[in-house]
Image (cartoon, rainbow, N blue to C red; front, side, top):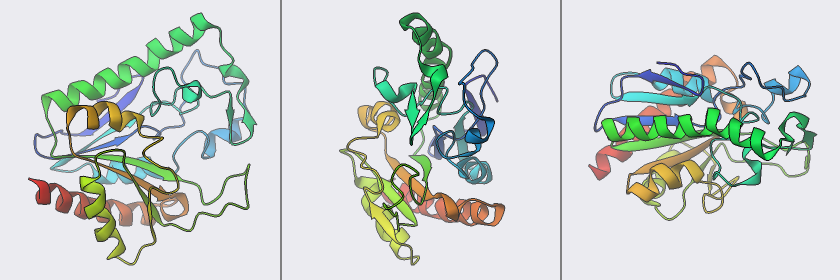
Length: 241
């Protein structure tokens, strides 16, 4: 299933795992002009590199994937509706002039993308309640705006108040010899909007994962992480079932 705002891969199943990827696309739809060089759409400011490939490989019996179908520069779905960064005017030092919008145009952009994305996700979760939601993102090894800040973690685990799945997943990931960031490179206390809305507010079990982009920048890496996250999410879901 595909709409202007999201793609739904696989068959959602009650008691299964639903992968949610808010930044899985670099698509800029008709009618939106960001005013940036095309090559920027291939960079991390526009898309979580590698995430779509991982999520697509995870969509199999017992797993489904709900993926954003527009760039995070068009609308950042992992933000609260009133957050200034939801239609970012600057990202990692790059100006996004097409997002300097009037109040009317901003409201129209939100109505076209933000509202359908979240209402669609809510409908999937209501119709087929999963045992676990996997919130899947990726992060760049360093920021162009701060190249001295290196990020050594292979993967980060994020959460806000509900850390049930996170605590178990951290142990399972570390057992595979990975460098795991607990609330790194971002804290879920600060950046967890989609899971706050659809998981924590509803008492649903979830796991927030950030994979370093060089780990999933090609097909072999994506396949390896799809297999790993499939095993780990099944183990976490089973533990709490």
